[in-house]
Amino acid sequence: MYRLFKITNLLYFCVFASLVSSCASLSELSDMEVEKRLENCKTLGMPEIPCREVANEFGRRKQAEYKREKEEENKADQKIQEEKDLKSIEMAKTIKLPPAGMVDPNLSKLMLEAYATAFSEEKLTSLRAVIVSKSFVPIRHEISGIIIARGFGGVVAMKRPNGECFVASTYYEQDYDGQKYTNVHFKRYSTAWPPESTKYQQLIECSNVNK
Figure 1 (cartoon, helix red, strand yellow):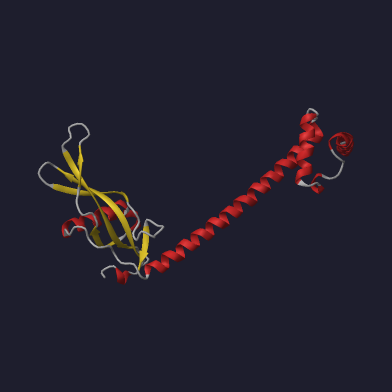
Figure 2 (cartoon, rainbow, N blue to C red):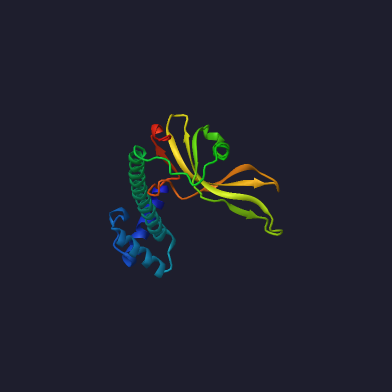
């Protein structure tokens, strides 16, 4: 009975195929031919049995095409990332920390603590911090207008547990209680250091940190 049903379906498909295309195996048709057959099916009202097979074949081909395109995109992205990594490794051999805009050893220490706290899960070791801003930016309360903090930029050097060292260009805010400036908070990454870097965390030779 099942075999008779399949034969009946095949005959029906072949009869209908004379209207939409030849009765060749769908797998033997080009993508353009399959797409054309699907358009003909839609025009003729999409009879269930033959057009379902055409639609399924069209869908399979589109999925395969999408998969190929994603694989090519991934390969291209991987190549770009590999090129960036190589550039970063080469830069690590020559870069140093930037010159200081202001010198405040206590504030530099607080910068390192704030950054290490913000990324505590990475278990970083603090090495050195440089304040690159030449002055502080006052931060005022949006309603009262009183100064509640000051902002400034800096570059920190840290070491990862695997022994790699990196520098990060960062922006901080330090609280003001009306009498003195207290806690320092890491707020965001700033313009990369060095400027030609493509990463927020740029590798640096550990021996270059204090040069």
